Amino acid sequence: MPPRDGDAKQEGEQTGAYRLLDVLYRQYHQQIDVIVADALYASRVFVETVLKHVWNVVIRLKDSQRLTIQSDTQRPESPTPFGFPGQNAIK
Image (cartoon, rainbow, N blue to C red; front, side, top):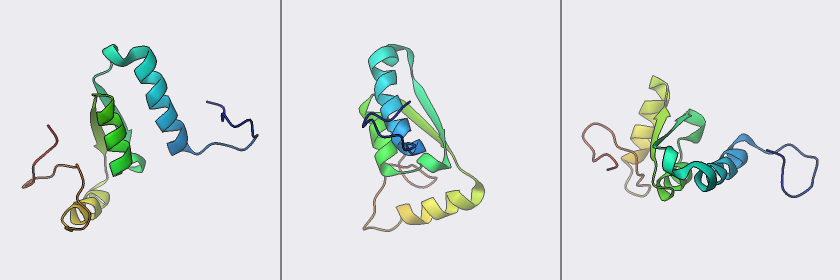
C-alpha cells in the first residue's frame, strides 16, 4: 500500500499492517474470523486493533520470544491481553 502522505519514503511494515486491517474490515469484515501474524506483531496495540474489529488473533512466536513475552505479562505494571498457561486467555 503506498503511503497516504504523498511522500516517496517507504512505509514501515507495522504501519502498513494497521492500515491493511482497516481496509480488510471495511471490505471483508464478515468473511474474516482469524488474523494470523508473526512475532513482529506481538504487541498490545496490534492485538487490541484486531479485537476491535471483532476478529480472533493468532501470533506465532519462537520459543525464546514466548518466554520473553510471558515474563513481560507477569509484571504487574504491564498487563497484556495475551493468554499463557496458568493465565486467563482472551475469550
